[in-house]
Each structure stands twice: as C-alpha cells, then as structure tokens.
Length: 145
Image (tube, rainbow, N blue to C red):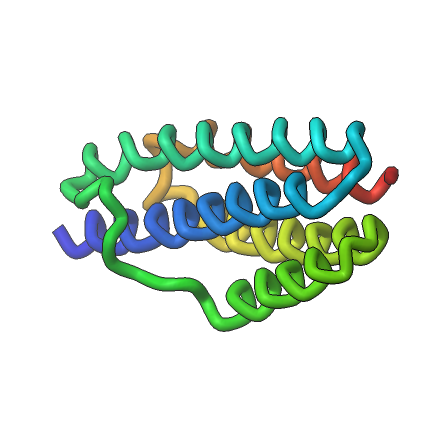
C-alpha cells in the first residue's frame, strides 16, 4: 500500500509537470507572431495534454485520484515557468524558446528520476519511456529553432 502511495505521488508530480508544460506552450503560442512557432507550440501543448491523460489512468490503477487536485509545483519548475511567463511578456521568440528549453530540461529530469525506480513503475515503465522520448524530441525541435 505504501508503494502505491509513492507511485501515485510520482505520477501526480509528472502530471503537474505535463500540465505546466501544456500551459507554457499554450501561452507561448499566444505570445508569438511566428506562424510556424505558433503551430509547433500548439502541437506540443496537445501532446502534453495527451501524456497527462495517459498518466491519470495509471494513477487510478494505483488507487489515486486522477483529478490531481493535490500536490503543487516543484520550486525549480515553478521558477522555470515564471521565467517562461517573463519571456512571453517580451514577445521575443528567442527568449520564449530559451525559456521553453529550460522547462523541457526540468521535465526530462523529473522523468529520469521516475525511470530510476524501475520496480515501482514496472507496469507503466514503457509509457514513461515513450513520453520521455517525446519530450526529448520536442526539446531537440525547440533547440533547432
């Protein structure tokens, strides 16, 4: 039972990061005038929403509440998204891309931490790996702009 609580906590932390990423991408899409970036940010916002839904089903499997009403933003991640909001207010694409890069690196770190606990996350390890790969691909695409 204690193990399930830890798994639910880990998964909710990932859902929080994914939700923050979705909101960050949506805000970035609104802030830029670049049509290509607007489309790219929209694509990644939708991807983060899909990832969060996938994890919520595993939260339920482990006895948690998928509404994700508890928890909060990690300190470092919260600072990252504050940086993104400041970059968005400048409306400079370079600043927006740099801030998103920082946010994606923080998300990858959180996924890496969860993936280190293979036994705890065995039933959804492949899903976490797939999502982490998607975030890494998004980061590579963002960094190429």
